[in-house]
Image (cartoon, rainbow, N blue to C red):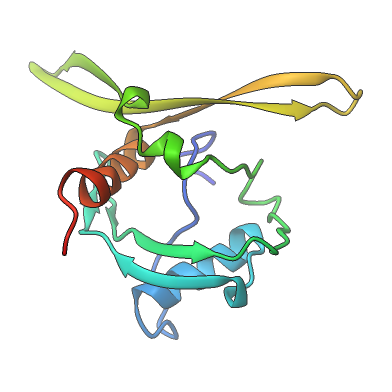
Length: 153
């Protein structure tokens, strides 16, 4: 992609005219980008709109995914696919706050570095760091607040 290349991101994109609603867009984009068929996905809700620093408006769609899925990532859009346990993402000990000065104002952002073991092509066991940051980490942090800090009845 020309924007956000090399960053860790959730599947997503623009609403197409044939999409019935935002969850339909999320299901379509997820299937197009990583090959996850909608039959494996149960949409359970949406988070409030998140506006990125680059002025993208994102509506995070929350879903449960059945464990028996297969993925076929679109090589034109996705370099790699990986999973992170929800209990890791919902643990505030893994939410790192960063700050810097930019154009006379202090900007803050979160990261959630995650390490996973993978078997390399040569058979070696390697540790791979996944540096989740920016909009993706911010949306996960919002999900944490919604789920853990201020759960709805």
